[in-house]
Length: 291
Image 1 (cartoon, rainbow, N blue to C red):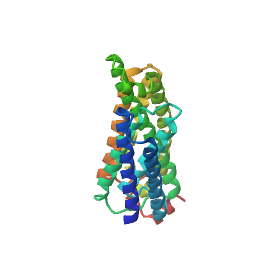
Image 2: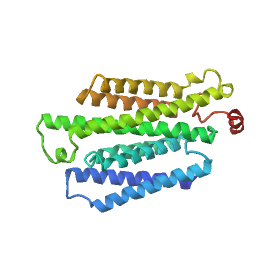
Image 3: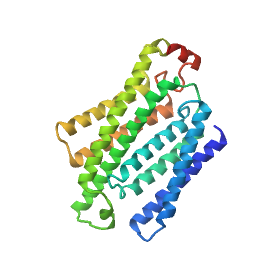
Image 4: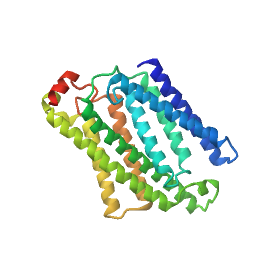
């Protein structure tokens, strides 16, 4: 990977960390670091992050997913966009410090993995790559938002039960708001994951001669289906069994842990020849197979 592009993401990760740490300080000490400087750090981080993805996309000629760092950086970027879009309408200001701490940790983890990643390999045909991966990543971002709302729900509920009405309690959204965010995030994530998986299966069926008839046993495919089945069950019990409150929050958190495990397993240990596999057939073969 070109050093310049790597430095862009390194800069973004450092700025995310600055924003996260100063946000935590202000959460417990309202007179802490200035708000303007903290938000400028976030703006600069997002710009550097976006520049990294654009540069890698231009370099590879497709979505930036040809390496572990590319994939993780794209996932983090989509997650940040979803959180920022939902933050103002759903008053998630109190959740933001914890979110950005976890986000910065994810960026640092992506950098740690970069030195051990394999050399980039050929990817899907560009059209199918976009149709498959963009919905999947948006779905994962929705699950991340649902898990964040669930975790905050547990914290808020604990504070209320202990009657610990302090500065932290005042900055957190109400339990009703968190429950609504959880539901809406799941309502976004599940259909997008369904769309992404459906496109991947359609592409694999059209290219069974290139991928082999056992493409469905690929770890990436199996992991995606397991995550889909889990969230289908979560939505079922939430909509039809009217599961709410603490148990619903725990389910969404467990689902996101499963999602991360599936994502990490594929990117750490690789994948067989499957719809989004970086080690798929040569580009010329793929173009021939999609005609």
